Structures are given as C-alpha cells and as structure tokens.
Amino acid sequence: MTKSGLVGRRVNISGSANEETNPEIIQYGHQLIAGTVRGILSEGGGLIIGAGKEPRAGRNANAPSLVFDWTVLENAASCFRGGSYKWPSSAGVPLIVVTSQKSESEIPDERRGLWNQLLSSGLMRVESIMPGARSAAILRDRQAQLGDILLTLGGGTGVEHLAGLYQDRRRPVIPLDLPLGANRNDGTGGSTLLALLARNKPENFLALQAPLSEMANTYLAMISTRNGTAKLDSVISALIELLKSLELPRVFYTRLLNPEHEAFPRVETFFRNVVDPVVELLGFKRIDMGIDASKHAFVNIAVFEDIHFASVVVADFTGVRPNCFVEAGYVLGRGIRLIATAEKGTQVPFDLYSILHHFWEPNLDNTEGQAAFLRFWKNTIDRNPVVRI
Image (cartoon, rainbow, N blue to C red; front, side):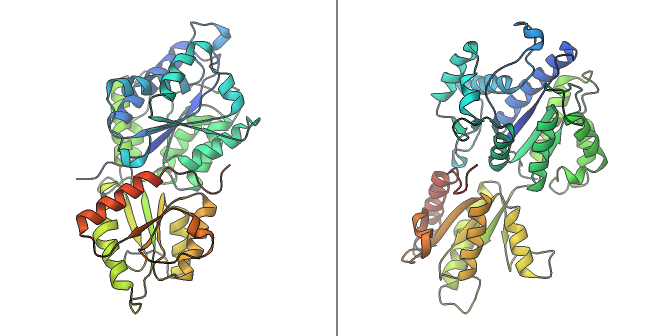
C-alpha cells in the first residue's frame, strides 16, 4: 500500500476567471474548488492561498467571484469549525495566506468576519511581503517557496508564472482544464493550456508513487472537466486520489559519513534509529548520500542536485565537517526548510550557532530519542527562511 502523498503537504490553489465567461462555468469552478478544499483537508493536506479584493463580473454583487481565494477560505473555515480536517500538528498550521499590506486593506467588508475568524483560529498563518509592495510576482515567489503542490484553474500570466516556479523546484503542478479565461485577460492560455501540455508530457508536471508511476496521464484524463459537463463529484474524487498518489516529498541528509571518525557509529545510530522512523512517520522519503541509490556518477553533483530539489534538509554537524557547512549554506540560501542537529556537546562554529539546533543525546532509548526529535521538528519546521522575499 502506498503512503498518501497529501498528508502534511500544502496545496497552493491559484487561478481566476474572465468576466465574459459563462457564469455557469464560473460557478462550476467554485463548486469544484469548494469540494476539493474539503477533500484536501479531510485527507490530511493543507492549503496556500492569497487574500484581497473579490472582483465580480459587471460589479454585480450576485455574480460569481472572478477569483477563488474566498471560496478556499470559506470552505477551510467551515472544515476548521466542524473539525473535519486531519492536518498533522507536526507540520505547523494547515493554512497559509500570502498577501500584501495593500491587498489586505482591500478585503471586502462582507468578508471581514470570515477573515477575523480565521485569524483567531490558530490554524492560519499570514505571510506578508514588504510594506507598500503589492507585486504579484513577489507574492507568487513567496507562495512557491512555501508550497508543496500547485493546483491551477483558469488564469493567465500569473498562473503560468507560478507553474514555472513550481516546476523549477520539481514540485507537482496539477492544471485543471476548465475554460474560465483570465481575470486580467492576459497570458497564453493559463491553466487550460497547461492542462493540454500536461497530457502531452505528464512527467514535466508530476510524478506518482510506484506502482502507479505509469498512470499519470490516466489520472489527468480522469480530472478533465469536459468544459464543465463532467460530474463534479467524480472530478473531485479523482483529483483527491491523484493528490494522494503523488510521489512522496524528499528529505535530504547531510551528515558525517566517514566510518573512520570516532563519532560515526553514534551518528549512524541516531539517523537509523531516530531520524529515519520520524521522517517515515511524517510521510517523507529520505535521501542519505552514500547509502541510497544515486543516478549521478559524481557525488558532488548528486549532493547539490538532491539538496536543490529537497523539501526538507536534515543537517547534522556532529564531527564539525566542512562539507556539511557548505551544504547547509546552500540550503539557507535556497530557502529550503532546514532541521539542524548535532550530538550534545558539539561546538557549532560560525553564525550557525544562532540557528536552533536539536542537540541529541546518544544514550537516550529510541522511543525517547524519536519523541524529542519529533518535538523539535514540529516546533521548527515552519520557521521563516533566512532569505525572505
């Protein structure tokens, strides 16, 4: 049985509709997103979204919204109130909103109650870009830095740019083919075009766990909306199954690997008996250089490529090895989530001493060691990166 590729992963939902689009198609899109949000949260996933104004076609208060942010937030709040979410507490909060000072000031009056409710829920974190800025590109950069999976519908240039950011990180992009157009009437086709490209080369958009690794195009066919005529429940169900079948995100280990070093047996025991079980529990796949298979002939190339595309890096500084510091510096510069560890008593040099570390004790039994490491992970995994946009 495969592990769920959705538990502990935040899905970034992005898209919009054009005011000339058939309102019934737009409403289909809102119903699709509402059901998908409820499915994501009930299966242990989380969300990343924006928040700001809510334009409607022709400024008609009864017309469907041309953006989907508030549909996401409305359904998330409903799930939180009803307790119908299974997000693991070890992964931080389930909902992150990336916004700007200007966008937040444009939240409609009729949405303020919902916004305040989410702010006080303890289940939503707000990320704001620099004061005075409202650059959509900066907002998208921040979303891509924080997100695990991208789900798109409609939209134009913004959706296309965000998809490129996720693909650059080798993170899944799932584009829906609903013909919504774009709020700003820009781009080259938005999510509809991306859906066609995904059907042609699904490997450029997502990867599934074995034994489903050859089924990506089949799943993409199953989530086709057929211009808004496909049965909503079927599309939502297939979409949630696709999200659950995604390849597990990876955790890269940078650590002491020299078996001649006196600390090696203790480091090896810590990783095998403490780190591995916790990483597996949290739904990740490990990459431990020198132990796990690599496609590269040169280790130095493999190390930096694996770090570059990792979701999390566990960096252990026991033994004070220079290569570990170089690799940790790359992690910090990339804004990748870092879990810093070292054997108790290690003197961590440079400015790394100011980063929170888990100083593990070799004499703890496995159960105590795992519990301590899991607590540290939970308390630090959602810290802001050193390099912020």
